[in-house]
Image (cartoon, rainbow, N blue to C red; front, top):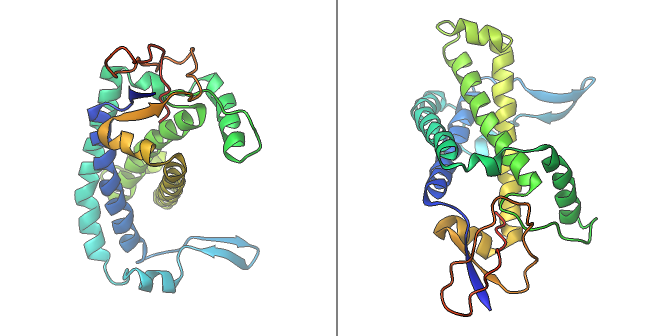
Length: 248
């Protein structure tokens, strides 16, 4: 027996799929800008472990000598990134979705259990809920990173007009480094997110497109303490009246 579970509202899906290409262009255009002055490395003494980024990396992606182009793309898509972010945050508050995204004290303990299970160090699968502890922490952190990227971006974009903001962030050089670190954080989140989606399978990906997921009977039950439990929507006498799992 199968049952249909509604997982993601239409607005959330729109914000998600709009943000994906916008953030991609922001990172790509930021790389074109960073090429003009790329001072960051990770070193131990005089030995360089990582250089962001080697010349071969720039040439492979056809990055050199595109500073003006990168700046033009970055400033345009900056407004789309900010607008989409404002609408998303506003929607989560109006709809009440923020309750599923803001971590609680229990989220950190749940995140450890989920991580141990994903690494194969825990045999018992954590309860199915809309967003588990690890997801809450990750998604909420991404929202904070979006705010941080906006503030640090403005601090290095208008360091004279917004001198108070630049000073608050530690000065121009500090704000630029913070902006760079946040960008690396977005890239790492993207890589991990894609890996988790692939691991979760097609049904999980499809739910972010269609808004629902078809669940087979026998799936581990949803945590009864989760506020995200939703009744199934399959009509007819064979419908399962119990709450359905709503993994993100």
